[in-house]
Length: 334
Image (cartoon, rainbow, N blue to C red; front, top):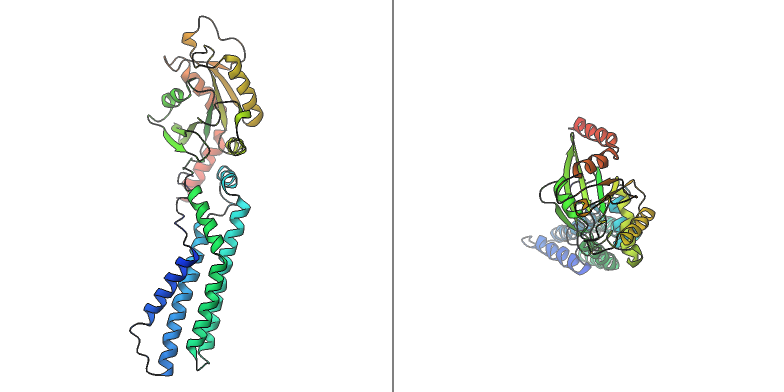
């Protein structure tokens, strides 16, 4: 999914804004109509009521349509929405707005029917206006909550549902250098509400499949015991995005963190994120001897030694067959 699924949600109006829009348009619909008889007055009232009904029901329906089905979006985004707002809360409020739109549509239809058999269409229209206003005011709190959710969810950037390598490790161990070396020249920075920095997202290709590599500053770069609940949930959500995790260690300690501390973070990450992990020792050009045990690969992002080999290992750990099948299915649809 290359396009952000929440970006199409427009600002959601309040009850007051909706009612003002509907009744202003209704009054405009009456202008220009000559009212000389009971039948012409009824037609004018019908026009006003139908206009108000359509404005309110259509706008409320549009609010509902703008939100995606939270049962069908990628699990990564579903979990993030649940962290930031609550999926059940969103569903409940969307259902309330949908009910209001349907109720107003039904009320308008029934009221127009009554007008056609009444000698006092204006009274019926005004009574319908009153009931419509009550219904819309009843869901004002739902509209406001959905607009609050909209403002939060739109901050979530687009991260494609593609074969993905997630990068972890303490600051200054060479994560961003690795991303820049193996992927697009200028990785995009994706800012999330729960990261101190932005996720750096680079892209590369394996055959016909576009893949991505995601650096996670602000999430997987310090002990998880220092994380708040939202950050921990966000870390858990990464399991739906990543296929394999590259944990980079600086055994030289020039990053400012002792190797033992870095290995303890690795242990915590392994316990919290359930995906295949490859541990790479970086900055080996600064070492006088081999970095010791516990590493699957060694490299230097300064000289480039070992970087290609690490990348090949990472790609081999991804199940590319399922992504090739998905790509072929999409090509058939085209």
